[in-house]
Length: 289
Length: 257
Image (cartoon, rainbow over all chains, first blue to last red; front, side):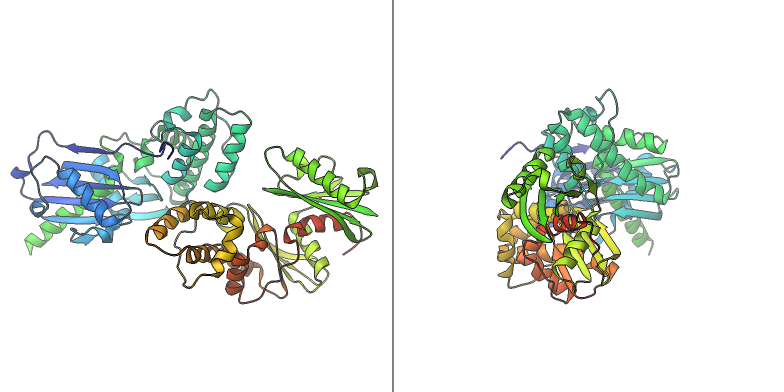
């Protein structure tokens, strides 16, 4: 097996200040995506712990692994969590969740928490889809558009290029910005054809950074056309794994003429954060009854 | 009168030499890295088979994505015009031509005289072209030429949700893990690509007779899926991948259709 260039960095985090034992309401949001899974634990509506890992071959196990990793060394156990909401592509396969909510709603809600209530447009660039979401000051979805049919403009497309060029997915963004002059974008839309086109460019003697620049700008343009269709209103936030790719983000910002808000948290946890917030709202509503 | 048609496709270069309305030489060469060299090689080979030299050829017409590489061609026409011209020559009853190549798919509606009435093209997405089957054959670890016969052994219909070739590859991995037999997966792959082609053909209208040309027409599994999807039997000519080049060579004779 050759080196797996698509492998991105998994992570987990626990709040250094908080203890779940002091909390009244403990909720969890588990986002099982096609490529990555996140478990987010919130105590009284504040971020307590999260994990972000690769989705395995079956969704239930991925959800369990994610929540176990988030709870690691905290002394917290599943039975202490009052309510769990599942979201993402595998949301109906989260065995310990009481409810499933779409990732569109969760990403808007999560972005509202992570970036603040001024966010009106959320772009979620995931592993196998890309969503442009318009929302209000409460993080409620007003409108959205998504591409989940075609790998162009998704993380999976970038993984194909990481493997082709033998560059780690974590380094692609920086490397694509090393070019002295921006090359014309790759002309093929389809990732399969773009890969052949890129092979041709490499044979012509193009260096890796130039090929990456050409693909990154094609990808940024593809995402731009999705955003254009729904319209971008400030503030603008980007969630998902590709938000970590500075090469795509900076080219997209340039094309839009708008800067995205700087993330304070791991951009991949937005869906999980939204799900955990929904879980809290559900608990509070039930208590009032 | 001798004329030549050169079809510089995404994957292969095809040359057909016509003499007095008859095919006297043909050749197919992988386009490879140096398309220009491949074009020259295919042209020389076809001439050799015909027992002719370049000076004997009155007109040379090029088509295809790489047609500019055929620098010695006297003129160029569209792939759509060439495909319909070639198909009508082989069977005058043809009204719908379906052309599936490595990176493109086309559906063409022609009238009695072989004139193009309407057409639809997919050149943007691998899901409606031969590249899709190739990518899936790689994922299944099956030789591309075995995909067709393998899928004819299928005993159950397995749906594929993914349209995109990249996503379909991941989906195949899941199917492999759930122990779906390879023939059923091969059938699912051909059904998927046939679906895409059928929806494209519907846009121009399905009218008999229907001829399937292009390299993918060699794939019996795809033909079977396409027939099911169209609810009709397509005609597959001998040497379906040469029909475009044949049409180009016919256009080079200067004679009306």
